[in-house]
Amino acid sequence: MECNQECSECDVVIHRSAKINKDIVIRLNRIEGQVKGVRSMINKDVYCDDVLIQISAVQAALASVAKILLDSHIRTCVIKRLQAGDEEVINELIKTIGKLYKPK
Image (cartoon, rainbow, N blue to C red; front, side, top):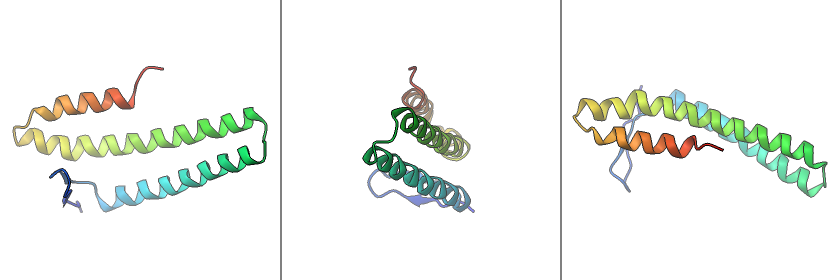
């Protein structure tokens, strides 16, 4: 089941399934808890190395959400726009991937 909810601000149609949205929300809730844990560690003056390891875990969790969302975007939005003849979506996708995966 696809959402096809229209975004009032940008006139873009969202095609994520309810299952993907639920998975993303669950992951984001978990990430929110991890971030609160990092803040608590800072407030408790926990050893820096331990805090940095937790920050790394948060970053990995966010990257996982981004991959899920990117996969969904390509399989739905990008394909639909290409089928409609909108090749500008390729430039948009390349730009987005560039922002997501900047070299460190």
